[in-house]
Structures are given as C-alpha cells and as structure tokens.
Image 1: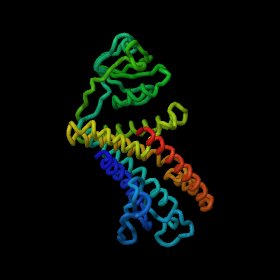
Image 2: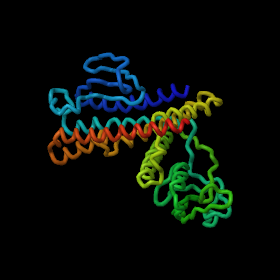
Image 3: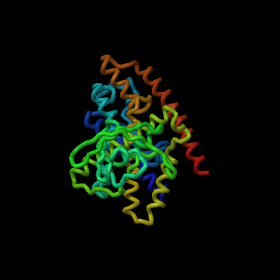
Length: 344
C-alpha cells in the first residue's frame, strides 16, 4: 500500500509542476507537443488537439515538451518564436506551481488541526532561558533578528545551531517585547544543547484567513528548511550518503502509512499532506537553482538573453545543459544506490 500511495503522491506533485509549464505555455500561445507523466517508453498515449498526453513506464518524473531545445524552430507557436519574457514565465511556472500546491496543502493542514504557535509552556531551571527571566506564556517573536511565527521554526534554529552559539531572542509578554541572549546548554540527561524552554505541543485553531496566513508561514518554513539542508550539504555538515531519492520517498511513505494506519485514514491523509508540502516545496526550490538542465539553469540563460538583448548561441547552451544532465543522471544513480543500500 505504501508503494501505491508513494506513486500517487509523487505523480500528483510532478503533474502539477508540469501543469505549470503547460498552463503558461498555452497562455502565451506556445505549442505543446507532449505532456507526459513518468519516464521511459510510452505505455499509453492519446492525441488531443496539438498535444499528445502520455503515461510512461517509470512512474517518476514527467515532461511538458514544447520544442524548446530545437533552436531552428521559429515557426508560429514554437517556444523559441516567443519573447524572452514569455519564455521566462513558462520556465518559472513549474516551480511556482509547486509552491502553490505546497501552500494549498499547508493551508488545509492548518485549517484541519491548527498551527504550533511559538508560546512558551514551561521554562526549565538550570538553563539560560530561566536565568534571563523567561516565563511560561511568553510569545517568542524573533530569533537572531528573524521573525518567528511557528514553534517548528524555533526547533529548526536550535537544530541548525551546531556550535551552540548564543542566540538573540525576542519575546512578548503583556504587550511588551524584551530581547535577551540565550546560550544553549547541555545538562546531564540532554541529548543535545537546549535553550531551556518547551512548548505545550498543542495547536492553535485558525479561521479561514488565519489558515491561509499560517499556511504561508508553514511554506516559508519548509523553503528555509530546504535551503538550510543545502547549506549543510555544501559545507560538509551532512554527507552525500545522506541524500535520498525516489526509493527513499517510497520507503518513507510506506513507514508513514504503517505508523498512521491504526489511527485511520484521516491520520494517514494528514501525514501524507505534511510530506507532500515538504516534497513540493523542496522540488520548487531545487528546480529554481541555477543548475544546467533544470528550470533554474534554463532561466539563467534567459536572464542573460534579456540583459544582453540577444540569445546565447543555442549550441553552446545545449552543451551546458547536456553536461548538466549527465551530472544529474550520475547523481541520481548515486542516490538510488544509497537508497537501495539502506534497505539491507
């Protein structure tokens, strides 16, 4: 069951990403030759108008083929015949649609169960927070100058503070804001250094508009989480062997299903929505990175074209994308190998 749910979840996210490209292509009068879900040989295809809709053998990935790689095609309705701004809108639409999907799912979650407000429930003795005068009921509003809206943002900041550096913290009490410096400390029974305060673990219910607002805060959290993970990868704080791909996602979905199933389908659905927000936000960020062969890489060439007023020679751009695609394929094989090794 976990495998089926993983395929459905991943397929929905990929379809919505490609739907972004498809929608903006149509709005800009660009011909779409094929819209496909999956990779590899075609299992099923149907021609509707000028577009062939296909289902491929491998249930991961997808494509919206607009002939963008055919530099010689300047015919009416071709991708390359349109203005640079029209082409940029089509390329960026995929990641933007991923952010929209993540926002919708996050809003549903907040409307369903509420949000984890950054309200202190307990302050433990022996830690810096108590020494600085924090009390239960304090609402944390900033950490190191960054606005805080969710308790999970505090947890992430503490998790990313590998060297236990002092943290400038602002809290609100009775309408008055106070800024202190909290030094994480590890006492006898602690797994990791702590600032010394805890959440109640309860969620605050939200109405319609608050659900959208805190859905947006949740999306921002996952985007920041993705960037923090990338930063750790680049700086060597996490290793390449910790990367996970499609097989890892299937395993995660299967674990979520097994753990949630005793609580019934509402619990399963809620946990899958949480995972969908993470994956969709992650896919949006990754596709906007300036990496050749990804949307972000193509966007870089279009920005350069807009600035210089003429296109970079297609053969040179093509060489860069081919090289980038080769590196991505090598990385996918490496990640796939990692995922398989974790199964044994």
